[in-house]
Length: 143
Image (tube, rainbow, N blue to C red; front, top):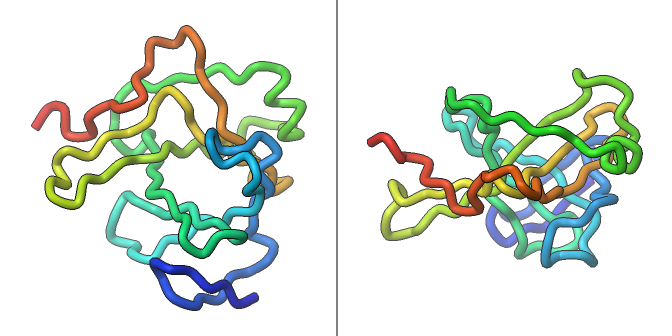
């Protein structure tokens, strides 16, 4: 399928790789279809591109690649909503905010991760209430 995007131009995507956000991204309740893009294989960052809005793409990252402790407990309601059958089918990503004028000021939203079920192509954003995680955790905190 051809997908027109503002950031990446017109790209070909495999329709089977489109995720249905049954638990919507906060503030974007009407947008349900997203695809993960990896335009540069040499970086930790990927992009979550809206299929319905060509201008909307979030930079995302897997915190597991950053070597710090990040543990989440999924509520039963999330497991049910995303039809999760086993832990191997879960992909956890986090939205980042990258300032154009200071990339070292990049922050990661640890409080509200994106949960993907790669078996069912269902996904959602959840808020980890009471976790103590930050919404703007500095990615380069120790540098």
